[in-house]
View 1 (cartoon, rainbow, N blue to C red):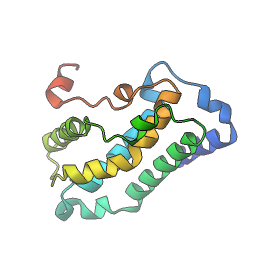
View 2: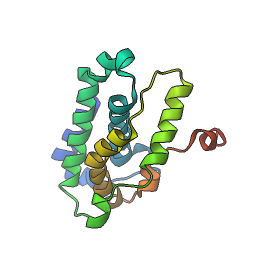
View 3: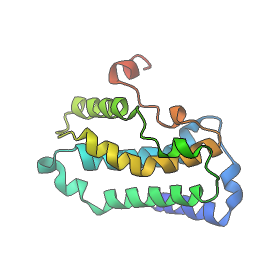
Length: 157
């Protein structure tokens, strides 16, 4: 989390960093924050509370979520919204993305109690920020949210 805080501070004190980007979105702030926010949302909405409740409510998980959201909000203040309609849409890809994540968790033997509706509700709270920042630095949502169904992901290995 220290690295995340340092990244936020670096962008705050050196705004020129907003305009540097790698060709691959793997190292982009938009993908990094997407992955962290998606991770914490999955932890909160998918893990079995009987088995993993202490972990799901832990301070590190909460800090990851709030730090990633703060970094994204800081970046979002500096970019105009590319398409206001796009930032408020509830993406149709939620279902496929959630199903792929659920399959990975289950294949790893992690106890789950899925709640796709709660996942979609929480994701719709933070995804507009990703949609605002990603295109401003040259990445589309298809590059940022690149989770594939498990059988499709296996064919890429």
